[in-house]
Each structure stands twice: as structure tokens, then as C-alpha cells.
Image (cartoon, rainbow, N blue to C red; front, side, top):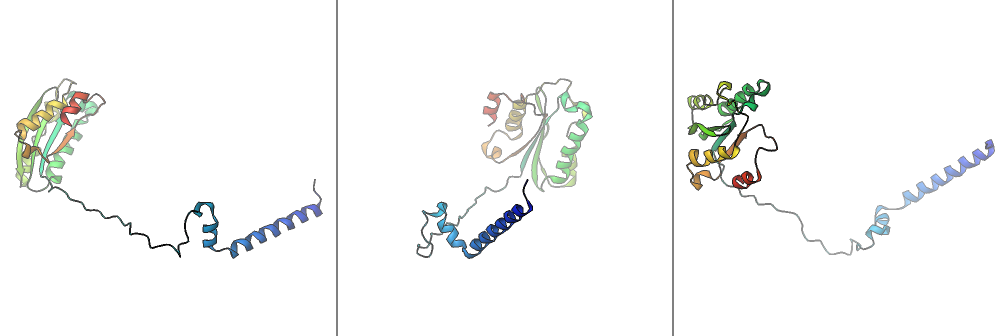
Length: 196
């Protein structure tokens, strides 16, 4: 146990030390602290240093003209309607076609399960009638497959060869929108290499 007198001496000593430290800090400039620090011993005094070169980065972005070609690949296996979710997939696809697709864009719809088929050939969307006709080609739940199997590579082949015509100038820049359940076994390594 400390006596009251010893405690008063300790408090007085601590307050003196704190006051001294505050005075030291107030009298030291920031430059002195920087240049006396071990981190800055290798740095020369900036007042004697040469002007640093301009290191401001510059960026030049060149983009290809935006493509207006789209292919919608829809998986239609039975697993896409688990818990009656196909109606939401169908509505989302129709909404993209009716409201989000740019004016004068070209779009095709390819459905696939274990095989693939072209639901609607590539067509220019320039009016509400075109949008409506294209969105009506999205399969409803009654046209879904009973099988759970799917072949994503078949859908890509269908899109490249039948929808785009297999010509490289038509294929380049085409946006592919893939709607699938996306499990880890969706694509084999060989399929990824063929598509990529």
C-alpha cells in the first residue's frame, strides 16, 4: 500500500514528465523529425535536391467501335425450372429484348439442352414490333426439356455456324449472353479451350 504522500510524489513526477515531453514536441519542427528519422537518412535535403522529373501518368485508350450484335443462349434443360423459376428467367430475357437492347441492334436467340436449336435467327431490332416478335421467341416452360443434360459447347457452335454464318467479320465483336444454371461441370476443359 502506498501512502498518500508517495502517491502525490508519483503524480507530480508523471505530470512533470508529460509537460517536458509536450515542450519537446512543440519545439521540434516537422522537417527535423523527418530528416532525423532512420527512414529518411538516405534522402537528401529537398532544398538542395534537383527538381524531380514529372512522373504524372498519361493514359491513351483506344477502343474498337461498339458492336451491336448479340446472341442470347438460353439453357432449356429441366433443371432451369426447379422451384418454378423459369418464368423469371423468361421474363428477364424478354425484358432485355424489349427494353434494354439498343436501337438497330441485331439479336438471335439460341436454346440448348443436350442439343441446340435456333429459336430466332439474327434480326435487326428497329421497332417495337421487331422487339415483340423477338421476345416472343424466348421459350416458355412448356418447351423446356425433360432431361437434365445440357451441352454449352453445342450452343456456342450453333451460334457461330448457323446464326452468325461462320464468317470471322460477323463473329468478331458479337456479344454472347449465356443463361445457364452454371454448375462446376458446365464446361469440360476441352470445351473451355474450344470456346476460349
